[in-house]
Amino acid sequence: MSESMNRRDAMGIAFGACAAVGGIFALAGMKKAWDPLPSVKAAGTTTVDISTAEANVLYTEKWRGKPVFIIKKTPEMVAASSDVVKKRDLVIGNDHFMICIGLCTHLGCIPSYEPKNATNKEAFLCACHGATYDQSGINTKAPAPLPMLIPPFKLENGKIVLGEAGPEYEKMKADGVLGETPLQA
Image (cartoon, rainbow, N blue to C red):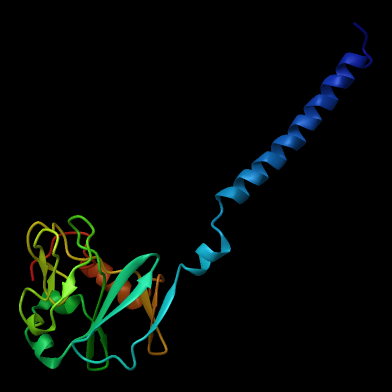
């Protein structure tokens, strides 16, 4: 064998270089395919103006393909609330709001809201299997195993931005009332 590069060595180096360049382009293409589309990135947050919300009226917004329930509570609803329920409320001035993902935690059905039952433990009824939730989305009758989840949100100039965690959401998280564990109303 000679110390100088022969034809076989040159072909091996050229082939290795082409394979490396092709591998880099393949990885770049795979990364681009894995990244979310711009339309998906734009759907990550939803802004809801609650300045004109009426008391005891269910507002439903769509966030990431899921319904989000928002209710401005009446003074009677707030008075009938326990301390745990009040911890799940978003308080802006003197107004209390309930925000939760409007899906039953049993099988994912969408519960209906009964305004006349807003101060008792059957404000929301899941028609699929009879689960009920109170005015703050806490499960009060089986088969629902957990409260309705509270989505990440933040306040911005009197509006709720769903999809971004703000200080109010972080406080609820620290209090353990987001709906990830069972709660007693």
